[in-house]
Amino acid sequence: MKIVKVKMKYHKDLTPERWFKFSFDEQMANVGADIGRAINWRNKDKEQSKNFLKMGLILFDAIIADPKNKDKQKELLKVHKELVNYFSGNNFSESDDEKWNNYFYGFNYAVAVKAQR
Image (cartoon, rainbow, N blue to C red):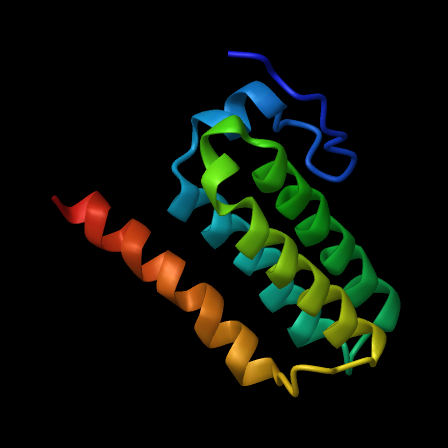
């Protein structure tokens, strides 16, 4: 398997090789954690919120670069674009914090269910 180079600037202990071993649901749950933090910090500390957003987008880029997710790339690119638009104020899809939290919650739930098996 060819490993695509992805900069893990904010996640220094996470290499692309390790990241690619996570299931798709685990990857999305991790992105969701950073996006949730970005949402939670937006009204408290804008700089901290931006940092969490950057972390989430870096991980999202790594999901897109992961060869096992090739069949999902079109959908992932669309979600990535909507996330960027939402946080930049160009909310074309009329999303809100709750919709984003609910979207990523589904991946957290899937990971939790698999862990209990």
